[in-house]
Image 1 (cartoon, helix red, strand yellow):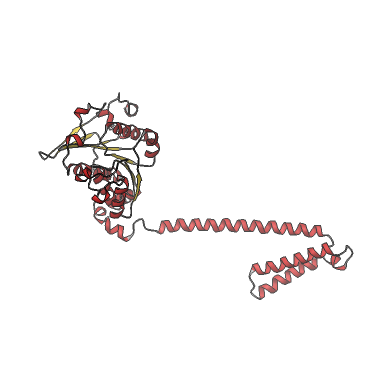
Image 2: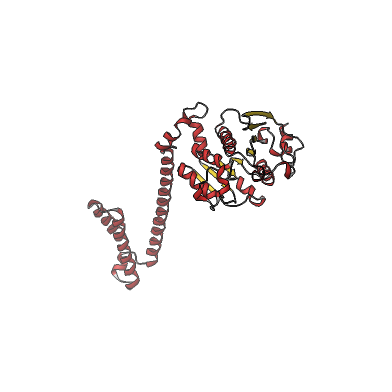
Length: 353
């Protein structure tokens, strides 16, 4: 047995002097081991070569098994170390990689020089996830300006398709998009305007069975719908999710908006509008008409409120409702208060008080 170990040492030493890699030297020793083991199996018990190399094949099998175990352990350790180094390198690369490339820095430069936003605010916008309900009149300017401003992830849910009658006010859509799902039409325009944002289109109606799971993925929701059932569903879900809701509404020449955020002590939508009005008191835009630029004014204001919330700039319209009358060029702000008996957020208000 000592003879075999001596031969192993000689092979290793000669290979080292010749500059052979460790794997080649290990292979030569492996070949020697296989030869010795085969010799012990084939030759008779009293053969001189068996006597010179340890006599028992069981002992060599034990040595081989032990060597194989050590080799396997080293391989596992090597792989784990390699994987850990790769993960560490990826983390270092992520830390070294700038958050904004040169094109983005130039694109958002006018934001970054604003004292209230700056680089940190623009970073918060890139990391923000905002959900927009509706890709129609209000949704159009909201989506356009959130994308242009660099909000990193924008979800939009709507089950409608672009119609010719929409194009008088829904400026994100084009004549060539008639018949296309609004969410896909909007997505195409948003990514064409800013390829650095992620747009998530949901081509379906918002319903109670999907609302909770959908809202969980977002930090903020903007409601640009025109029916009260959806508005109440959006409000209920936003209250449960604990995220702010920016809601806007239009009629003829007048529009209104507010930030409903019970988590900050502000009222929710149902605090102000406890129940839906009779249909004849709140006709749709198709029935009552609407000025084409009006959704642009109110939707843009909603986008402004979203950016203020994301960047913590200025004073958002929490506890206030802004009403704009385009016909007479007037705007006014009224105070709105939470209700402790509100079925949607009353429990939150009770805790706050």
